[in-house]
Image (cartoon, rainbow, N blue to C red; front, side):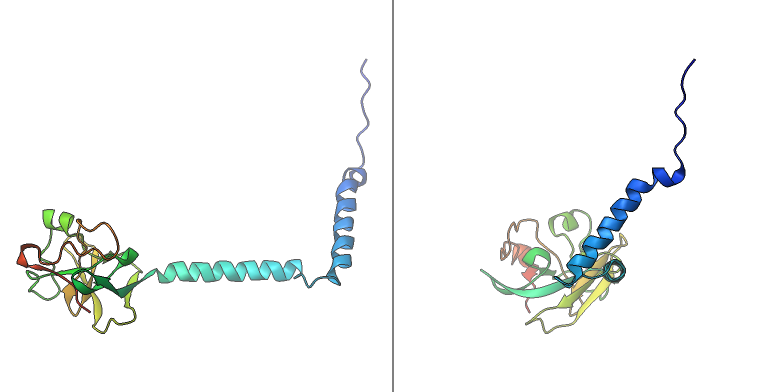
Length: 173
């Protein structure tokens, strides 16, 4: 024969939790006079508000500021991570990039994803716009000229692509 332990009533099983909750309420009430801590409701509301702001910010997309950088070739527009931007003389048809395939490997276009945008920073006086590339990406333009990076630049302020082939130039502000 085995002796069975009688089941504890529900009120006894919840007793430790009730005591812990009561202690938390007492501690909260005691410390409320010492510091101005927000209530649980206020904290929850603030968290929801912060999450909504972050969500709206993500929905609005990231913004890349085009700036002016000093390079060995002179003042130039700079894109993400302050890398020098270039223009291509063969881009003669408005709204179209002539640099595709291997060209785009050596001269990566300055692109933005859907919902992102490029904006003009201090000293950038021309018009910032975008075009659709053949591959479906969105390339940033300056005064209707598509903008590119140069694969031979490794740090902010490099201008190794200026004058290459007589058709690549730093994008002057």
